[in-house]
Every structure is written in C-alpha cells, then in structure tokens.
Length: 483
Image (cartoon, rainbow, N blue to C red; front, side, top):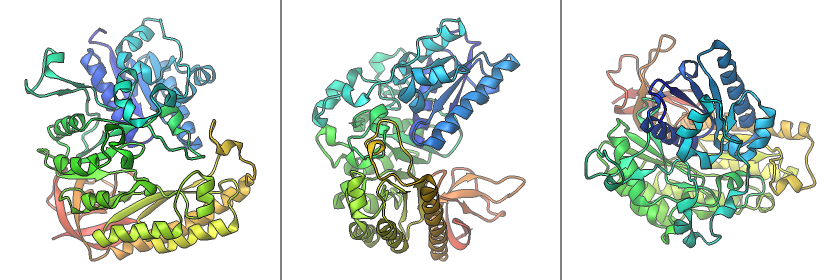
C-alpha cells in the first residue's frame, strides 16, 4: 500500500464510458490509500484515461499526455501514466513515440493499478502494454461468455464486493461498490455492458474493447443504489451497444425488465438509455422506454448513413425508408421524444446518389442533434483495405455540406419545441458571464445535446427537476420559464 501522502489525479478524455472507467479506477486507488485530487498539477501521478476512437480523439489524448508531461518540470508531478483506449490499442507503439509518458498500461493493469503507480514512483515502471485483439479473449458464442469473462478485464463493470469479501461494508448487508465520484454533477453514467459483436467496416472498437459482455442486473442495480446515495438524480446507461444487453445472459428483454427497477431506486428520478443500434431495436424495448415513468423519452440511435447500398458496404443494415419507419414508431409512442444520431460522410465508394439519400433522410427525420464525421482510415479495420477511397478534399467538402445542412435542421427542430412543457434537471446556477440556471430537458443528453436555460430569477438548486415551458431558443439550446 502506498504512503498516504501519495496523490493521484485522473484526467478523462472521450465518452461517458471512459468516465465510468475513471471513477472505478479512482475507487480502487482510494481503497489502496491514494489521495484523489482534481488538478493534475497537485498530484504525484497524473493518470490520463485516453480515447482512441477517431483521429481527432487520438490527437486530443496525446495533447493531454504532453500537457501532463509538462507538469513534471514544476517538480510536483512526478509521473504521467497513459491508460484507456489509446493505451490499450497501441501500447508499446504509443510508449515509443511518447517518452513523456512514464508508463503505458492496458486494461489488464487496472485491477492492480495501485501497485503499478507505486512502482513507477519508485523508479520501477512496468513494461508497456502489448496490444492484442481482445475479441479473442472470450468465447465466440455469447451464451458461453459469462463464465469465461471471470479472468478478463472489463473496465467500468464496477467491482461489486459482497459483504463477505470485505472487512467493511455499509450498510453491512449490502454489496459495496468500488467507485469514487470525481465530480459533483447530479447525473452519472452507469455501464451496463462492454464490448461489441458487430463488425462495422469502419470501426476498431471491438478489437480493443473486446466482445460483448453484459453486466448482471444485480450488479447494475447495486451500483445504481450507490449512485442514488451519492446525490445522483439521473443515471445514464452506457455501453457500446445497449440493444444487445442480456443476449449473453440468455434474455434480450433484460433491459426492458430492468428499467422499472432502476427508476424505483431511492434517489434516482430519471434514467436515460444511450447507444441503440437501429437493426436491434425491438418494439418491446420501445414500449419499455416510452411507457416506464422515470425513463426519459430520449433515443440515441446509431444510424451512420441512410443509403442502403452504402450501409451494406459499411457492414450495417437499414435504409432511408426503414430508418424513417423506426422514427415513426418512436414518435407514435412518444411525440416529444428527443432523438440524436451520428453519420459518416465520404466513406469509400460513397456516390452522389448515396449522399443525396442521406440528405433526404436527414431532412425528413427531424433529429434533435446529429454528429457528422468525415471518413478516415482506422488501423486494422476492413474499410482500411477498401479501394475507391475519396480524395481528402472531397471528403472535407461533403463533410462541410452535410454539417451545414444538419446545423440548419437542428435549429429548426429546436424551434419546433417552443411551447412544449419540459422537465429540466438543473446542473448549475450560472456564472458571471451568464447568471441563468442551466440544465437539461428530458430530451437532451449530457454534454453534447444542448442545454436548457431557466430565468435568472428562478429559485432552484443543483439537482432540482423543474417543470417549465419552452419560450425561445438560442441555437439548439432551449430557453424555458418555470410553470
């Protein structure tokens, strides 16, 4: 166990799934006597939880590592450690190219992170991680995975220690969750699964996150209860593919049945589901998400494109007609539902007709938020081997064209919400630049889907859920007055 004087800061990049991983790491380190600090400049060790999803995310992660490395010149920060997806994906290669990092550690190092950090500070850094295809660590058949997952590192699956496993448990009869909150937000991500079995031609995530593994509902509920005890009002269910939840547990309806249990957890007032694969969305799941009080009407659906021939080339399913039909099913059940998605333009072989099909889909889909990405090769993916690559300037032109279209469509969608009644979770009370309280309506996901402003005079506190009427918009953000 390290000296109590040793401190660590976790710097998190990327998605909400990484945030869960960081809080689990923080819980493990705190358990082992480390002092958690917010600012890396105040820490003996800066642990940077990197993202390795797309090129820009990789650059951001490397910049964060370099910035943390600069802190060592001040004399307070003694070591910088890279973990997370970029470290898992590139390991030794990243270490060779980035000497500013004192260690590059993969997912298998998380459980013993305290010992690794202590060794680094003592001048005995462990060997850099050697990457491998993590899909091979588990059985091919999903139903055979739960037993086989016992020896496989699954970050963010929230080590749940039963009372007979630990010397201290509170309350004595309850499981103890090994996680530490790293912020005071009234919402928190909660991981329900890791990995992905899909083989999208453009995506490398399954190679470094592994095959799909669900967390057991009892563990998800135990962590939800812990979050409810730590001032969390909204839990955000995250995974690489939430629509696959339960398939390796023998029941694809487990998410449907778990949602009412989650909203019944003391302290939890809202539950939000993220990352739905359109090809796997079932009517029963739509019913559960729209008819369960406390589950917000929010649908994060991964369309990626709308041209049927191009989707097949991407190793995906669907079409413009199928996707619009799915959106109609959502809105029949919940007319005010918030719907977000991401699309890729410039994929190898994308024709003008494909692009027009995507445009027509976006015009008719009335999506609240759309992330638009230009295609770039990802190491080890099938699409990397494709011919018919579009010139970079053509990809950039298509990216700008679709982004401009989407910006206008998202503004129109926000304006359509004027007059609607919304439930706003207050997240901050404003600042000197803008003193208005800021929160999110049920239709707005964390960080990337816009916010809702309440009047400066509103008597609210962080964590309140306020009923309000949308009276105006500021871009995609909503302006609402309390009712």
